[in-house]
Image (cartoon, rainbow, N blue to C red; front, side):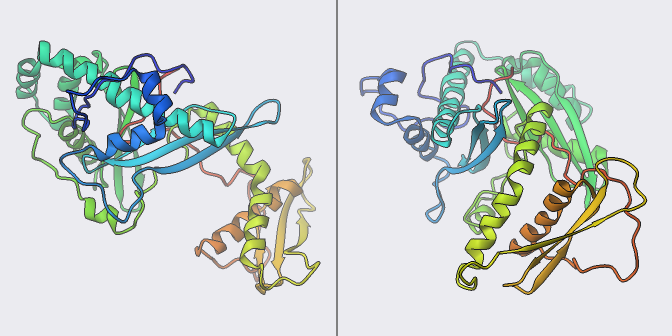
Length: 376
């Protein structure tokens, strides 16, 4: 992902759908189009132009989310990501880091337009002039597995630039999930498959989905978009946290999140209890317990936060330092407000503090249908 400006003017075509633009009308330059409508409005028109799947009536066309990070000068930066259904398939597009949410929103929309209309449009024009379909079909006929078929497809498909797919997988209680990273027209894409009983089956499932997405020969009718499952929830399922972040960006995001965690949870509590709080009443009360056997600094500590207006008390895990203990306990309050409450009462017997390892998840860049940012 890069903050470099979009490189090419827009064209009126895309990989799997065509913009609903009348070719008889005079073409506008990218700058003129932006001045008249703006990139957000143009992206919405592009998404609605799909002739294969109509946009759901009870769902926002563009669904926005924002990440934030703290700069070395302690200023906040924002990055917007937009989710939309394109030809019935959920896509998530991330922009670059910007000084405000409004600027970040425009940046993400413009990047999406440049990629889907500009770069893919040029790719389709090049394929029309000298298609490599026969070469791809011949390569896929030599496949020994779906994973091998994807590797052969990438080696023969000019949009991949000859770069082989890169695999990663994870194992959970329900099985294995595979993700595959592809470089398409210089842009990193990460596709995910469904949960399968083995890692090999998970990679095969992800490979088949990618080949179907690109309508590779022999895979054109293997899947069909299940739009009804998405429409029921009114929102497109969110990608995993920090899906578009590098390791350095994930660390910066985590630092920003921790610096503002207490303030955000306190604001949520005040809104939730606005009709129950009396004038001058504190929304929560804190107490702390130190591990007297710990000789390091700052010492191990765990915090208990009481919310009198809710008659609830939350005991956080052991953390190194009072500030970290406060943050960990505030996460329990946030989970309770989200409806994911657990037993947070004090234990009946003394527990060992355990390690002071950070309880936050390790962030990765994972699964998206189309991450329309540029590699740095």
